Image 1 (cartoon, rainbow, N blue to C red):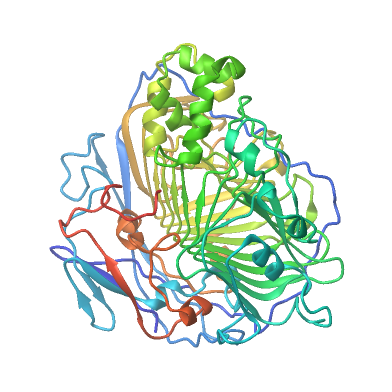
Image 2 (image 1 turned 90 degrees about the vertical axis):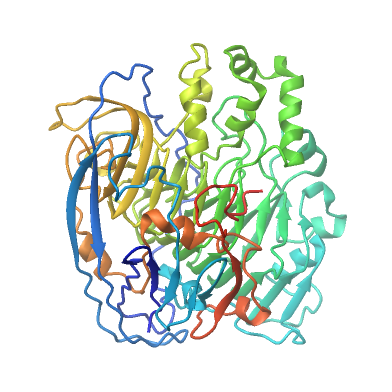
Length: 637
């Protein structure tokens, strides 16, 4: 039975624990169509949203509130086994009310969308915790989404030769390699179930590797840093996870892997599948690009690509990703059945010494960086530049190019993730299918800086704010459910550069909470009378992106939406999942998202499904007011 989570205020409110079940394949389907296209032509010239400094008109906010009914059914959740359960029937009803933009006169509406009332959690198994501790059901952390069924290396005894503990860069590269560098007679090394435990932080920078490690086939030198004084010293590597199957890489303590880009790819004659990466932190592949384009270095934190042979069933869970130069997790060339869950994507801050080395270098050498200097001369302070540089623009690119037909096979789930000051490619989809649910997109810090920059007359255009949120183009299909979006000017976008129909994608948000200040946007809808939208003040909307017309700024931008049968999209899903109330996601995610925030045993980290047990030591604030970033342990640093 799916564990339902109930929040009790003055009356009981169901936390929308909805399950969606269809059949799960008993084995991984290797029949994927792949393109052999070899040229890299990712479009990084996403059109920036036009923002006007003149905000002349306003209108009432609309809140569309939907109460989602839970229907739970018994299910068997063993890995690689068939599920022949019928789909759950999810019924909903909606109602609309209007309230003023200050959100002050409606008792059912929060004055601040990040503040929550006093709480009590009750679990469906009748275990109740109130106050400061919550022991959540482990079932919350089952592998959901398109990667459901993944097992990685499985549960392996630590004394086994296939349980490999790594503490150095050389040990790590050996362990993830496509062949056994120690025992050359070990011919099934790449496919035999294997678990790699990362014991401590590891620097994988190219210049830190000794000559033996640099000669391994699974690591190469990345493009040289050009501006960052620290990265010039340590260098950046590209580490390949190629032709591996049945592999788990994890850390018990949330260890950090620094100064390396990772590529998960198929081998020349072998596919890559059944890979799990959990409880790791990734950092150290960003430097300032004064052009503002961030194209030259080609540093992506992760690239998952299936151009030679199929790459499928990849689960990245409970990881922390810091700001990256280019993409954070890019998925291309038909790689499919991928889930990114319970991860945090966070900006840098002044406590990060490596980041501040870059910022101090810029400040002390302004003549070498004309756009940085122009921004400072426009009136931006050094603190403003720190805030600006911390923003993460390119997060998830899904689909290699506009015409790579193999990308039609891509299927990705993003669920229960926390995005702080990430404003673009959440994700940016071409051709495939993406399911997004229970995510927090909090760009409120970016929003405050953006509003200040609007008042600066000479801010350089090369450093313009680009806020295109979740993008679905080229006949791609993106379904968003029960998400919380704060401070992104264009939360949903269905076209990036060309007006022809083939460049438009389907995108819809269901039961999502959206709030933003001083929105400025130009609509291209032929049926819309307001060609320019300027909303002065705090705008808040809760409901479906299809509801309403001019007063619904959650609806897709800028083209007339394509017909999108969201019910059929859900019917076609091969997995079950839980939905939470969008306003309460800060409670749901507290002390649960990112690396090194939950306490698991080795066996639990090696598992992908849980039937019994609770997550221990999840401490909530005891003042009853949740949502402040200073109170929530969301692993920002």
